[in-house]
Length: 139
Image 1 (cartoon, rainbow, N blue to C red):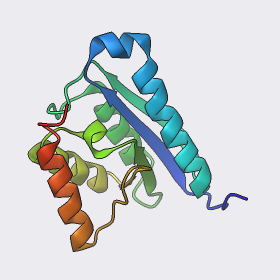
Image 2: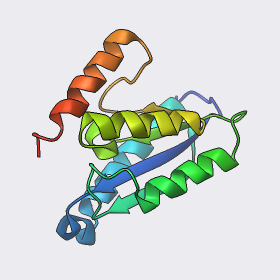
Image 3: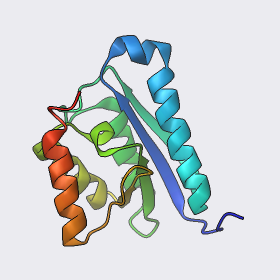
């Protein structure tokens, strides 16, 4: 039985390779994993935002911009969980990762992932930093 939390969630998916994104496989896979995670947690998925053919080193992305606008419009009183498949789907590189994580939090979003526990505890932030730092080398 899944928990009924009524917490709203959005999903963010990204692929850099347009050949893969044209097939849709990578985006479909990411979305499916994120939806399964949200269902296990009892989250209500309100929207799915996608960026296809966009580098993880880029901060300014159409899907990301749309998600940030959505989060801001739905107010700070109604915090949304932002489900990402993995940290490297959000960003490649520490600077980009930290900037986007900060923007998501400022817009009222709380990051979660089926791949890694993302918490505000120092040890969790350290692991995130290491993953974000090494993501440029793991392609």
